[in-house]
Length: 141
Image (cartoon, rainbow, N blue to C red; front, side):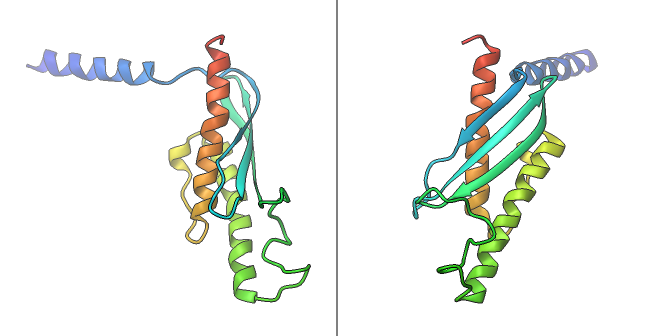
């Protein structure tokens, strides 16, 4: 019985390792779909020695402008302090998502920030798009 359990454990570890695709070194970009306002996320990941070396993430408004320090302002002014604070929370979260992913190389280790879940979903989708390109290239397609 002990031998069977050890064999099953070894087999499951081997199969778990087989499911992970090799990533080809390079810089890959990915994009999320649009949210209900027409905004989308873009990511750029650098892969070195088959591992995530760097990650950058931005989201863009419907008109293509990057959501940055002016995100949440109206005509360059803060007309609603609560809205601006929430918008800037999302901007900070975008950096957190990219930093956490670059540090760990594991999407499951990137935690959503309360109040910035749409940006989180866009981040995950954009990274998956970029990784698909890196993996497809690794398979020689």
